[in-house]
Image (cartoon, rainbow, N blue to C red; front, side):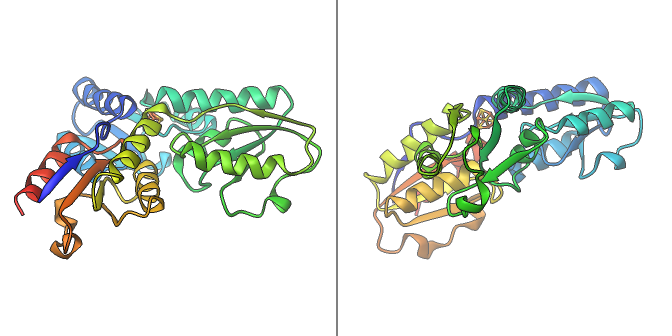
Length: 280
Ligand code: SF4
């Protein structure tokens, strides 16, 4: 089978930094003494490898014994979580991506400037849960939500978005907000260019292939967004974690396959997938 790979794909600098920090922390604190608050990134292959190297994982801060080190993942954490970590005398290793940190600061600043803050994103995503905690009240909305009930009228609105959302997606929600009566709209672009570049490369590749494979964790928001964009292009698209999820009937009648991957997918997973697909 002929296989074409997206020019921009896989690991972003935020994920690379988080993995490097995690590995450094294992070296500094010793295997078993550093505990990540949730999966460092949304990729099982990477998380399992770090676990084998000695990085433990906890769902709740309260389950981490006092005196241990806690790793804050690339999605960031709320100020309240960081404060509780301090109170429990945990040593904090902060792997929050700089772009997520920027979104947190933007929300804090918009609040200080008196804006009613609206975040376009998935309310259940850890990045969004962390970012909105930097102001007392943030309205979280996404495409398809009822804006009439969610967005207050005649207000000064400050708008930010989840870093992994596609620009067109965010623009369409902003356009809907702008149709309603508002006093002022301040939009701060918090989208991640690393994600946008992967999205553009995936959409471009859709024009050259007849089936697309988007590799990445099933919980990875940016991988899911990549798959959604390919489907929107009318492409037959499969979001898979690794080659283990591949089924031969996915390429029945297809001659050229495209492969891309989310920002938390290691190049080794991509290369393994491509080699096996080419060998079909
Ligand atoms: S995708 Fe962007 S925002 Fe998310 S970790 Fe990577 S660089 Fe940071």
